[in-house]
Length: 238
Image (tube, rainbow, N blue to C red; front, side):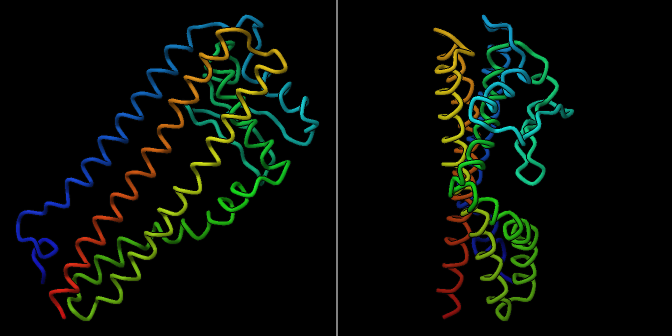
């Protein structure tokens, strides 16, 4: 056995995991606080998130996408398989600036799908692969450690599967940022939001984007930790 990955009882690489965890918690708190703040700001048009979403889709000539409610908080998402913009309870019927911004962001994904936005297609293609990799990466690494020296190949396979998870996170970044950019631009150009409301919505979507940045950073840090741990082990084995 290799103790705690060859570092005895002290594993200095855990600082990378802690940094990733702190970033994720900070980003999550930031998006919740920002959303809650602007959830109390009613839009001047008085449109609900659902109404704004439908108007945005129609403005782009998209009539085959359905806007529907889903349960939960901040569970909003666009499903390209069913062609649905799914809006959470706090977004679908709310007239707040925050709700309209979130609804518009999901419509941004529908527009990406409609125009064949390449990063979105890449992310969709990655989903089954990354699901497989995320489920098997850590079990394979642990099995390889239990086997010992003979399990080096299994550990490496586990790490490469985790690389798929990291790649998925990195591909997700431009998809989410582009959807928010499309959303803010359209909300302003077709007059759903006006004046300072546009800036307020930009803050909401900017905070939401931080969660994806934090998730990608946490995954990269975890991958770096794995490389440091098992790279050192290979050196000792040689």
